[in-house]
Image 1 (cartoon, rainbow, N blue to C red):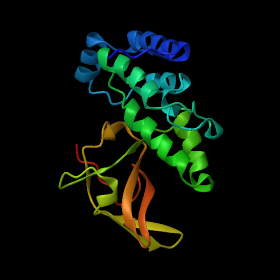
Image 2 (cartoon, rainbow, N blue to C red; image 1 turned 30 degrees about the vertical axis):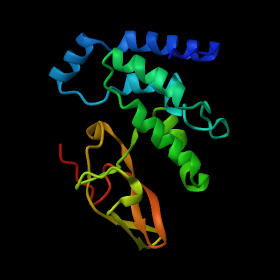
Image 3 (cartoon, rainbow, N blue to C red; image 1 turned 90 degrees about the vertical axis):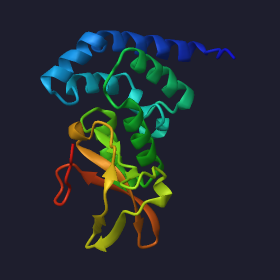
Image 4 (tube, rainbow, N blue to C red; image 1 turned 120 degrees about the horizontal axis):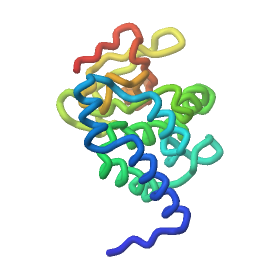
Amino acid sequence: MDLILSEEQTLLQQSAETLVARHAGPQHLRGRRSGGAGLDRDIWRQIADAGWLGILTPEDSGGLGLGMTELALVLEQAGQGLMLEPVAAAAVAAGAIAQGDQGAGGDLLAAMMSGERIVLPALQEDYGAAEPSQAETTATADGAGFRLSGVKSFIPAAAGADGFLVPAQGPQGMILCSVGAGDTGVKLTI
């Protein structure tokens, strides 16, 4: 079955192809792998400027207000070009924050969508389940925030992230917590 793209979808696909051609490909991949560099912040900001991080975020929250088809068009180009940046994970994280309480997440969302901060979802538990509603990570009330206890695995590009969105079992059910990569008690094992 052929997918018939709208004019806007075709333009998005073409602009993604152009950006990926400039910043990806086998040579670029080899160079970054041998150099030991994490995420390239310059490329990340260009991805943000292109709006990719806001594809799933509503327009009233500063995003493009598009959907999975448009994200898939961008990811297809990124995959073909061997782009390392975790665009899908970051777009999903931004969309999740936009659906939550803007009072707490508005500044974080703005920083994510501008490319200033890289925040990725930490969904998978140690035992292998990636369904956030089955998280064994717990969140216990601690002053104005929560203290998290648990282990998350297989976070894409974790070493280059500024923070993570962590689903946890809270006092009244499932909650989504923003955790900084350098926060006390956070340990990354790569």
